[in-house]
Length: 165
Image (tube, rainbow, N blue to C red; front, side):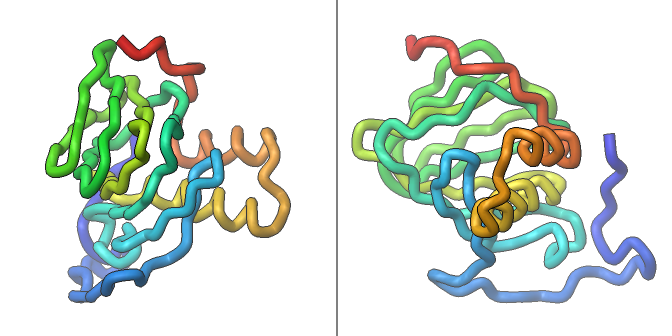
């Protein structure tokens, strides 16, 4: 597991305050092509967190996976079903779902889709979605690139999610 400290690793200087206004952020994407915005990156927060905003189409889903960092979702609109540590959790607008480091997890967006914030603690994993977006924009998103990104970001893919309830 990587060591994470808040601040500039070379100087120890704390991160600078910043504002990421509505609609602003660095473009990112899921492997399935859903667009995202990086609202706060590890680089901007001194490694403390990564924050993504995304709108997911109806029925969109992740694969079952795990990673070395904690993940938290705050549901802004719509509904999702989350699979976390061998159980399904239904989450609607206003709900928070927390995934501890290394816990197998994934989600399925509800029949009307949804909008959520994704927070990684410590930050860094948001870079996975930045790199997917860049590779996709360049027409270079291959299985080989995906495997390399999984390794870079300590992500383990375990296959499809189990059947919903």
